[in-house]
Length: 119
Ligand SMILES: [Fe+2]
Ligand SMILES: [Fe+2]
Image (cartoon, rainbow, N blue to C red; front, side):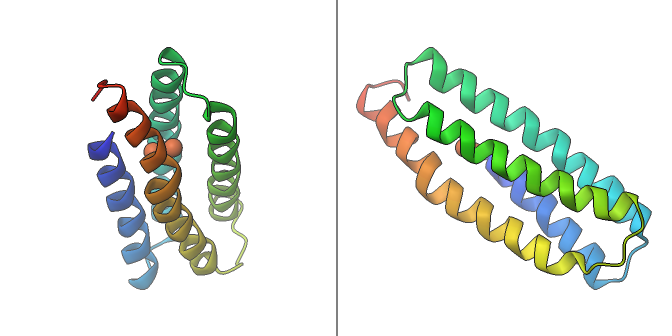
């Protein structure tokens, strides 16, 4: 899971660099699509792991994942429909969200699993 978190942050940073360099909207869109795909995969992995072990905080965790997916899809929508709204604030939001989520919610289940000798 930690490896997947690394890949997610790397992808977010790549989008950030693209924006800073003024990359074409299509290129940013393609990268965001990759992010949506990978994030969906990561969330599904996490949720099935937590489900398998009967993690009590699963519902709350799942809701957070759904909220984030909505945000990313919205960002992707902006790029695909050529809206000129600035993507930067949205990206900053995503980065903050990921960081906080990984450091709090993901950290919590990590400890819970550790305490049960699962990892
Ligand atoms: Fe995660
Ligand atoms: Fe998570």
